[in-house]
Image (cartoon, rainbow, N blue to C red; front, side):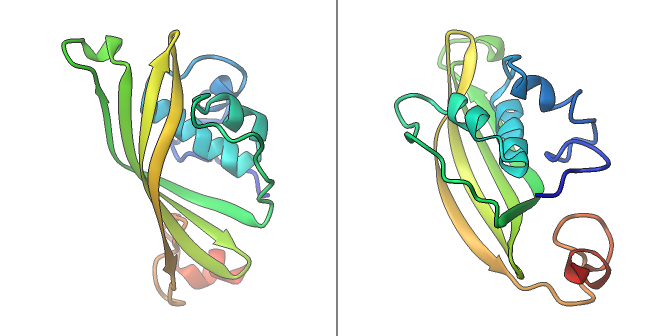
Length: 160
């Protein structure tokens, strides 16, 4: 596992403490997107307890196997919606987040894309479920790095 040196793993540009760290410490995430970002960061930081606690009880697995071979590199939020018939956004009890998460396993890179569903109960958002697809990435040496650093792949993640 490699911890971020320039901010939160979710890519918000804020420090971990200002961003996802406060949710990992127990503060409720205010939106489905904030919860999803904090869950991405929890995957990157291997915080299995947080992942389980933020998973809706109706779909939560009994345990999460450690994935220390997976290195989460980048999160892109493609769409985020809070909805509930006849209620304001602040009162919404369902949410949807469509995202793409880039990761590395050994020398292989891939992107997980998922349309996730979230539910709010008792003032807290929970991850309910999603429809994931995984696509293998084959970046070329001179392509932009898959991690989103803006550098060429060969001098960034391709040099590791």
